[in-house]
Amino acid sequence: MLILHAKLRKNHGTSTSRRLRIKNKLPAIIYGLKKNSVSIEIEQDAIKNIELKSEFYNQIINLIIENQENKVKVKAIQRHPFKLRLTHIDFIRQ
Image (cartoon, rainbow, N blue to C red; front, side, top):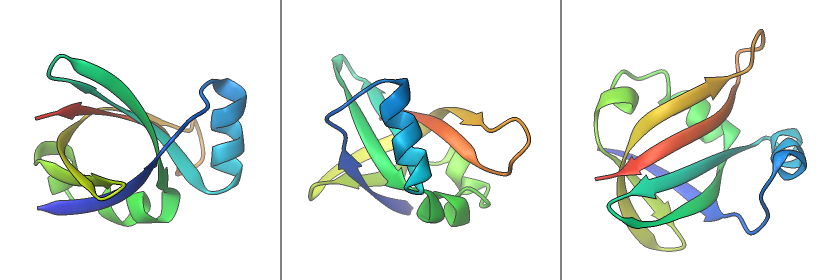
Protein backbone atom coordinates (compact mmCIF):
# COMPACT_ATOMS: atom_id res chain seq x y z
CA MET A 1 0.00 0.00 0.00
CA LEU A 2 1.30 3.45 -0.90
CA ILE A 3 1.58 6.05 1.87
CA LEU A 4 1.40 9.82 1.41
CA HIS A 5 1.59 12.61 3.98
CA ALA A 6 -0.45 15.79 3.55
CA LYS A 7 -1.46 18.96 5.38
CA LEU A 8 -4.85 20.63 5.60
CA ARG A 9 -5.39 23.78 3.55
CA LYS A 10 -7.29 26.62 5.16
CA ASN A 11 -7.43 28.94 2.14
CA HIS A 12 -9.00 28.08 -1.20
CA GLY A 13 -9.04 29.56 -4.66
CA THR A 14 -6.89 30.09 -7.70
CA SER A 15 -4.41 32.55 -6.19
CA THR A 16 -3.84 30.35 -3.14
CA SER A 17 -3.25 27.33 -5.37
CA ARG A 18 -0.73 29.31 -7.44
CA ARG A 19 1.17 30.28 -4.31
CA LEU A 20 1.26 26.64 -3.23
CA ARG A 21 2.66 25.52 -6.60
CA ILE A 22 5.39 28.17 -6.38
CA LYS A 23 6.37 26.67 -3.01
CA ASN A 24 6.60 23.23 -4.68
CA LYS A 25 3.37 22.00 -3.12
CA LEU A 26 0.40 20.43 -4.86
CA PRO A 27 -3.23 21.36 -4.04
CA ALA A 28 -5.60 18.42 -3.72
CA ILE A 29 -9.06 17.55 -2.44
CA ILE A 30 -10.63 14.50 -0.77
CA TYR A 31 -14.34 13.79 -1.11
CA GLY A 32 -16.83 10.92 -0.98
CA LEU A 33 -18.65 8.63 1.49
CA LYS A 34 -21.18 11.40 2.22
CA LYS A 35 -18.61 13.36 4.24
CA ASN A 36 -17.53 16.95 3.72
CA SER A 37 -14.74 17.52 1.24
CA VAL A 38 -11.30 18.29 2.64
CA SER A 39 -8.75 20.53 0.91
CA ILE A 40 -5.14 19.43 1.37
CA GLU A 41 -1.63 20.17 0.14
CA ILE A 42 1.03 17.60 -0.70
CA GLU A 43 4.74 18.00 -1.37
CA GLN A 44 5.29 17.97 -5.15
CA ASP A 45 8.46 15.86 -4.82
CA ALA A 46 6.66 13.14 -2.83
CA ILE A 47 3.95 12.85 -5.49
CA LYS A 48 6.45 12.94 -8.36
CA ASN A 49 8.14 9.74 -7.16
CA ILE A 50 4.94 7.87 -6.32
CA GLU A 51 2.95 8.79 -9.44
CA LEU A 52 5.47 6.94 -11.61
CA LYS A 53 4.20 3.66 -10.14
CA SER A 54 1.14 2.08 -11.72
CA GLU A 55 -0.25 1.30 -8.25
CA PHE A 56 -0.78 5.03 -7.71
CA TYR A 57 -3.67 5.06 -10.19
CA ASN A 58 -5.50 1.85 -9.30
CA GLN A 59 -4.78 0.87 -5.69
CA ILE A 60 -5.88 2.31 -2.36
CA ILE A 61 -3.50 4.93 -0.97
CA ASN A 62 -3.04 5.54 2.74
CA LEU A 63 -3.16 9.34 2.99
CA ILE A 64 -2.05 10.61 6.41
CA ILE A 65 -3.35 14.06 7.39
CA GLU A 66 -2.38 15.32 10.85
CA ASN A 67 -1.86 11.78 12.19
CA GLN A 68 -5.22 10.62 10.84
CA GLU A 69 -5.24 7.87 8.22
CA ASN A 70 -7.52 8.12 5.20
CA LYS A 71 -7.98 5.35 2.64
CA VAL A 72 -8.34 7.01 -0.76
CA LYS A 73 -8.05 6.35 -4.48
CA VAL A 74 -7.03 8.77 -7.21
CA LYS A 75 -10.17 10.00 -8.99
CA ALA A 76 -8.82 12.74 -11.28
CA ILE A 77 -5.49 14.37 -12.06
CA GLN A 78 -4.80 17.70 -13.73
CA ARG A 79 -1.44 18.20 -15.41
CA HIS A 80 0.37 21.27 -16.64
CA PRO A 81 -0.05 21.60 -20.44
CA PHE A 82 3.65 21.38 -21.32
CA LYS A 83 5.66 20.96 -18.10
CA LEU A 84 5.99 17.54 -16.52
CA ARG A 85 4.12 18.62 -13.39
CA LEU A 86 0.81 17.87 -11.77
CA THR A 87 -1.39 20.85 -10.94
CA HIS A 88 -4.19 19.25 -8.91
CA ILE A 89 -5.39 15.83 -7.68
CA ASP A 90 -8.86 14.66 -6.65
CA PHE A 91 -8.98 11.75 -4.21
CA ILE A 92 -12.12 9.77 -3.38
CA ARG A 93 -12.57 8.08 0.01
CA GLN A 94 -12.78 4.31 0.15
